[in-house]
Image (cartoon, rainbow, N blue to C red):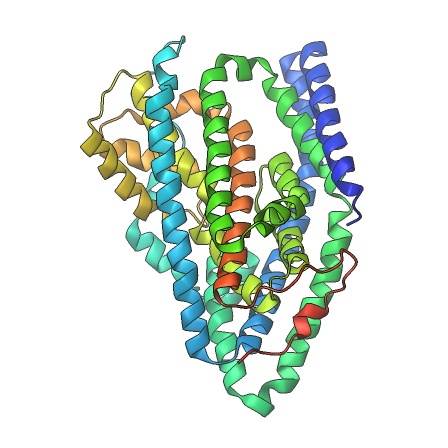
Amino acid sequence: MKKYMIHVILAALLLGIVVGYLIFIEVDAETGKTVASYFELISTLFLRLIKMIIAPLVFSTLVVGITHVGESSAIGRLFLKTMAWFISASLLSLLLGLLMVNILRPGDALNMPVPDAHAATGLKTSALSLQTFVEHLVPRSIFEAMATNEILQIVVFSVFFGIALASLGERGKLLAAGVDALAHVMLVVTGYVMTFAPLAVFAAVAATVAKQGLWVLLVFAKFMGGFYLSLFILWALLALAGFVVLGPRVVRLIALMREPILLAFSTASSEAAYPKTLEALEQFGVPNRIAAFVLPMGYSFNLDGSMMYCTFASLFIAQAYGITLPLGTQLTMLLILMLTSKGMAGVPRASLVVIAATLNQFSIPEAGLLLIMGIDQFLDMGRSATNVVGNTIATAVVSKWEGALGEEKPAAADDAYLDEPATA
C-alpha cells in the first residue's frame, strides 16, 4: 500500500464518525439500526476477505520460514525464546491492568444503577476451560482448521509440516518451491484486498456510531479514559522493553507500524492488520523465517491489550458493585487470568468470555458485564491496536535475540525475502 494510504484510512475514520453521528441524531433508532446494518455489511465483507487470506498466508509463510530455519533444534530454540517474551509480556499486561484500576478506581464513580445480579449476558463461559483449550490446540483436520480460521491449529500443523518438509532434503525441494510460490501469490492477493481498507474503516466506524451514538462515551468517560491511559502506558513499557533489546530502532519500528495499528484500531480486529504487520516487519529487517513463526503464535499467546483489559474490567465491575477484593485475592485472579486467557484464541468475544468466567470464580455478579458490553466495540479498538504493537515488538526482539535482525529495507522492496537462504 502506498504511503498516502495511511492518511486515507485516517480520513475514512474521521468521516465515519461524522456520518455515523449524523445518522444517529437525524433518524429514529430503528431506522438508524437499519442504515447501520448496511454499513456493517461492507465492513463484514472486508473482514471476510481478510479471513479468506489468513489461513493460506499463515500456512505458506510459516512453512517457508521453517524450511529456511533448517534444523529442528533451531526451531525449538526459537520457540523457547518466543514463549519467554510472551509470558513476560502477559504478566506485565495483567499487572499493569490490576495496578491502574486500583489507582484510578473508575467503578467507584459509576452513576447508574447496577444491573440485576441474575441478568443474563448471553456469553458461553463453558467455552473456556483448560480441557477445551488443550483439545482445541490440535486440529481434527487441517482443512477444518483452515475453513474456520483457527490460527493456533494452523500453526501446529504448519510446524509439523515444515519440519517434515525440511527433513526430506533434496526430495522436498519441489514441494518447498510450490509452497514458496503460494506465499508469493498470497502476498499479491493481500495487496489487492488492502485496497478496500479505507472503505471498510469508514463503514465499521459509521455503523458503530450510528447505533451507539457518542453519548455512551460520556457516560463511561472515566472508565474508557482510564483504560486508554493504561493502554498508552503499556505501549510505553513495551517500547521501553523493546528499546533494551533493539535500541533506538524501536522508535522506527513503531513508526513503520502506523498503518497496521490504524487498521486494527479502526476495524477493531487485529486479524485485519496481520498481512500488513508481516509486511512492515519485513521492511524493518526481520527475516520471514522468524516473522512467519513468531507472529501467528502471538495471535494466540500474546494478546497484550486483551489481557490487560481482563484485569482492568474485572476489577472495575467489582468496584461498581462495591465489592472489595484483598490484594491476595486480586493476585490470585491475575494468576488465573494468566492461564485462562491463553485459551482466548478461537472463542467468540474472547475477552468478555474470559472476564465472565473469572467473575464467577470470585463471586462477582456476571451481570456486571452488561455495564460494559455496550461500549465494548470502542474498547476493542484499543485492545486490537495494542495487540498489534505487542506482537510487532515481540517479533523484532526475538529476531534480534537470534542474531538475524537485518537493516531496514526500502518501502518499495519486493517480497524476495521469502527466498532468503537458511542461516547456520
